[in-house]
Amino acid sequence: LAKTTQPISMDSYEGQEVNITCSHNNIATNDYITWYQQFPSQGPRFIIQGYKTKVTNEVASLFIPADRKSSTLSLPRVSLSDTAVYYCLGTGANNLFFGTGTRLTVIP
Amino acid sequence: DTGVSQNPRHKITKRGQNVTFRCDPISEHNRLYWYRQTLGQGPEFLTYFQNEAQLEKSRLLSDRFSAERPKGSFSTLEIQRTEQGDSAMYLCASSLTQGDIRSYEQYFGPGTRLTVT
Image (cartoon, rainbow over all chains, first blue to last red; front, side, top):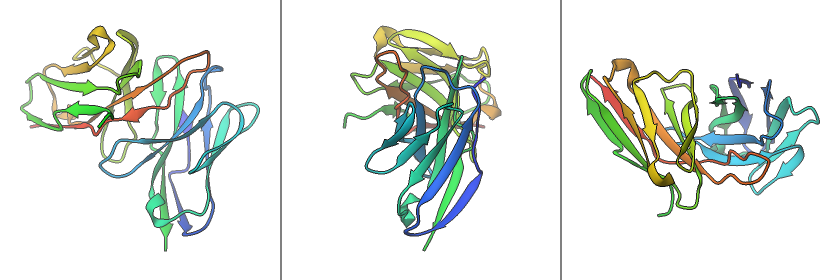
């Protein structure tokens, strides 16, 4: 059964880099590791996905170790608008698992 | 607007009634997912389709829930004999998955908020 573990909450000051780590115990060998952002009263929004090593796009970087049992989402220089819940998606047989996510609060 | 759309946006029903929700995915996407989300929790996976085939269904999904995706386009989610515990936001998402590595780059609709009284 797919399951993920992430910190429940994090606080950060504006302009700082934020790293959120997720443990995904049995992600399938042929699945990407995927992260989402969710604001209140909206559906989740895709941020980034990767298979191994490091992936970077215009909003974030994703670091994946060789064993793929965890991943770290890195948000550079966060702003107040980055306050949201961040989920790593667990994948496995017959299940996709969002968990409760990490509630990031950016402080002015 | 070429995003994922869901109808209705809100539904209030009495306990015991049946309800049906519709999702229209992004047109070129071959996968369609249904989730349920309650306050303070992440989306809970219900089921997903690849084209018209229902590939996976959560073990948490009771027999009162059924989903279809005729012709691999829009999808409907039906809840029979609704219970108060079914009150939640029902989210639909779609994605394009090709190749040997499975992508879960999903695009979500605005959701249908169900209230069972």
